[in-house]
Structure formats: C-alpha cells, structure tokens
Length: 238
Image 1 (cartoon, rainbow, N blue to C red):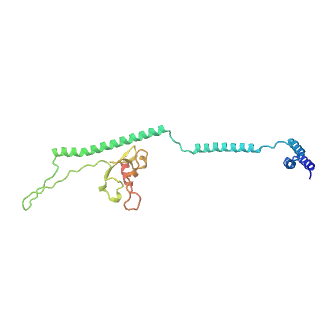
Image 2 (image 1 turned 120 degrees about the horizontal axis):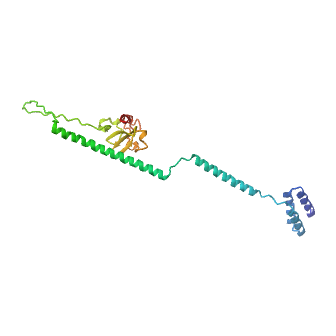
C-alpha cells in the first residue's frame, strides 16, 4: 500500500468519524519520512476535532464524591457522638462534689468525737451520783469479802458496727469498724476512718466507690462478701 492509498484511507475514515483509526494511518505516513506525506498528514489531522478530555470530568467526580463523603461522616459523628460538658462545667461539678465530701467527712469526725466524749461524761457524772459497782460480801473460810463488779452498760451510735460482732464470712469491710448511715433521702453510705463510701447505687454519684473497702469472700464461694444486710440496715435509718 503506497502513501496515496494510505492518505485516501485515512481521509475516508475521518469522513466517517473514525478519527482514532485515521490517526493510525497518518502516523504511518509520518513514519515514512516523506516531507510531503508528513505535511499532508498534519494538514488532514488539523481538521479533526480535538479529543474530549474525560480525565477532567473524572477528577471532578472524585472530588465531589470525597466532599460528600466527608460531610456525611461529619454529620454521623455529630449525631452519635456522646455529649461532653465544657471544662468549666466539669470543674464546677468536681468542686461541688469535693465540698460535699469534705462536709460529710467533717460531720463524721464531729459525730465520732461527740459519741466518744458522751460515754466519758456519763460515767463521770454517774460516779459522782450513783455507785457504778455492786459489792457483795460472801463469807469464806477466812471471812474475806468477795467483790463482784457490775459494769455500766455503754451505748453505741446508730449504725455502728464492728468486725468482732460478726462472723468472719459475714463481715464485708476491710476495716475493723464502720458506721452505716443514710443521707439525701435514700443514699446509704458507710463512714470509716479511711473516708465515706457509697453502699448502694443511689449514693454512687456523690461518694467514693465501695469497692475500695469491699472485702473478698474468704470462703471463695463468691467474689465479695454480701452487703445486703448492711444496705437494709442503712435504709432503715432513712
């Protein structure tokens, strides 16, 4: 096939709209090295419409897709993200909670001091007014009287419990003594020398968690010692 036939074929393909195939024939003419053939190929190809640049549309579509995806993800995060209070609000709540704990601890210490001082004052006043012991003379072989002392009963504060008054498997605290109390209508708490702790769910938001002093079950039948009886004791004080 000579260059004239190649040119005619390329021209016919161009007239039929087959520009891609026509360019292959024109490339053959340029590769021949004939200056006239190269000029004719350039002249014919200049009449071809410029190819559409599809890559621009693709880039635009990709960019639009990314923008829409980002907006959708942002809306989902804002819709389902948990609400976080501003730092100022959190700080204020922490201060109020700390003040409440300080007040409770102060009241507990004052109450213990009052309860400790009360029996001493009672025994002092009783000693000056009423005898605190009964002396019974029992004649023996040497006629020496035997003295029998009857101790005065001591009072304990409401909710006061001690380890020695319970069986080992029933004592749920890691301290030896505590005071069960009820505050804020139905919040059952336990006061110890290590602080004030929440004993039921109502008191959990205002006091230290009970897990800090909750004793492991020595029998191994349960993770911790049951505290149901002590919660009931506190509810009866409400």
